[in-house]
Each structure stands twice: as C-alpha cells, then as structure tokens.
Amino acid sequence: MAGLHSITIDEELAILRRGVAHEIPKDSLREKLELSRREKRPMRIKFGVDPSAPDLHLGHTVPLRKLRQFQELGHTVIFLIGDFTARIGDPTGVSVTRPQLNEAQVKAYAQTYLDQVWRVLDQAKTEVRYNSEWAGKMTFADVIRLAGKYTVAQILERDDFAKRYGEKKPIGVHEFLYPLVQGYDSVALRDDIEMCSTDQIFNCHVGRVLQQDAGMPGQSILAMPLIEGTDGVAKMSKSKGNAIGITEKPEDMYGKVLSLPDVLIEKFALLLLDEPLPAGLTPRDAKHALAKALVTAYHGAAAAEAAATGFDKVFVKHQVPDDAPEFRLAPGLVKDGRAWVVRLLTETGLAPSKNEANRLVDQRAVEVDGTLVTDPKSDVPVHDGSILKVGKRRFARLRVPED
Image (cartoon, rainbow, N blue to C red; front, side, top):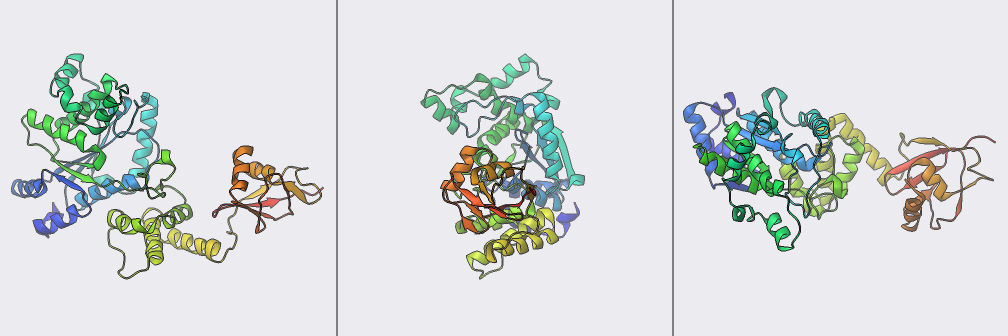
C-alpha cells in the first residue's frame, strides 16, 4: 500500500470525502481506514452496475472517479457487474416495473461497460466480478432464506415502492427480491465499503444489514451525488436526451458542456475534475475551461484544443466547419436552382421524417446559405456547395449533380 505510507489519515480522508454526499454511518470511513492501517491490508471497495444500457455518460463517472482515488491510495476496487440482477430489473426511481433483459442483451451491454470503464479506472488494479457467480447458483430454498431476512414493511420503506403501493400501481414480487439479491453481493464479496449514487442508498443499506446478519462488520456506504443533464433539471440520462456521453465526439462533448446552465459549473468541476477551476473566471470562461478539461480527460489535449477552435469558428465567427459532411443530392431534386426544404432535410438525414422536418422549420431552426427558412412548404435556392444548417451544430454541404 505504497500510497498510504506518505500521507496521514486526515489527508487521505480529505481526498476521499471530497464531493461525497453521504457517509453512512457517519465517520465510519475513518474507522475503516484506521483498521486497514492496523491490519496492514488494503480496504475492499465495491461498486456495482447493472448493464442495462450500452453507453456510459458523465453521470456514471462520478462514483468511478472516486473509485480511482481509492486505487491511487492503494486500496482494492471491485467493479461488480450485475449480470444476474440486471435480468431482474432494478426498481430504483421508476414508477412501473422495468422490462427484464435477456442474457444476450446483458452480456453485450456488460462488455460495452468494460470497454468504456477503463477510461476512468486502472484496469490493472481492478477486480472485476459478476454476481451470477453466486446468485446464479442459489436454490429456491436459498432464495426463501434470503427473503426471510427482511419484512414487507421494511421493503416498503423504500420511497419508490411506497409511492407505487400508495398509488395502487403493480409491484412484482421479483422487484421486492432485487434489493435483497443486490445486498447479498456485499456478503459474497466481503467488502469494507460500498460506493454508490444517492439513489442506491437503500440497496446498499440492505447489503450492510445482510453482512451484519452473517457475522461480518457492516460495510460503510459512500454515496455520490447525481448530476443533472444538459437541461439543468432532470438527472443525466440517455433516455431523457440530456446526457453527455464519454465516447461522444470531442466537438459534441465540448458543445454540450457549454450548453449547461451556469449554476452547474461549480458542481460539475467538483465531481468531474481532479483540480478546481481557476478562481476569478467569468461564467463563460469557467464553462470553456470545464469543457476543455473534460474533453482532455476522455479524448486528449489535442482533441480538446481542436474542439475549442472548432467551437470558436462555428459559433463565434459563424463559419462552416471544415469537416461538414457532404451530401450528393438525387438527380431531379433541384429544379431551376430550387428545392423543397423538407426534402433537403430528409434526404441529408438532418431530419428523420417529413413531420420532423416541418417541425424544425416551424421552430426557425433551419438555414440555407445563411438565410433563415420560415415556411416548410417553400422551395429554397440551392447551388452546388450550398450549406444546409439545422440548429447550432448540424451542417450539410450540398452537392448538386449536373443536368
């Protein structure tokens, strides 16, 4: 544990508590660290994910970055893939029963998670486990014994269950089993600390109770805050369309960070950067510094510089980006130097349907060669090399075939 010999416990606590929303029980992290040093063994920190979607976004990286700090301090990180629990479906934060995934979906999503998670965690210092190792071997008698560890009243203390029950919405019996199966992961792995987001505290508490029931010291729980998406309101989620993916193109990541409300800059810097932003920056400059730092973290300094330059070119100097995609229009689409704007949008893929193309024009989001198009029925002037623009960041350079 080389990282622990050079700093005091107070210094280590300052690093590990930075940005943490809840430490349960209070001050238990200090106790775990003191025991780790007395026994001269690294702590075991578990973080579990159900591979229920294929891509990671910045919200996912908040607990992952804290895990990386544990690794750098010499502790053991267990990245647990809930390949068994994903097939039950986590009821956290939903108002209806989640659809259950099949084994092939879970396996594919799990591999995608692993391909992306090494952008944050040190692969050489990470123990990867799957909860099918033990949950998949349980007999029905084992499940009955596990279910006997908690009462229905205790399970209904969970807010989302209580709300659905009060609203007379259906709750599957298998959903009651989910926190118990997830909690048993802590027994199987004998972890000292479970890392989670604030919406998973109930499940982590179940793990602590089950560990104590099995005669183990109960795990400490470190819960990290959820971060909002680009709308500044709802938590970041691909399903809500407000996520910033860690594998997105550098220019898209840069632009999305700049679209965040100013009030989120400090929170994002605290949870997503190793160092605070320089003091005294204007909100605009702070947001650019945040965007550049995040693109650098996931794509490198050169990509971040190019993204910043590209943003300046398109949004400040109002120039067309050099890499704007070209589209060769079908013969006959342009007649007498004009073309129906809706057809241009659907042919280039800038709108997936005529209805969407009409909506974009009605929202005054479409320009041709710098001229705003306001009537979805209009034929607009088009020549070879014309620029079709949708919103602030989508372009198409039109190639018109010769007659």
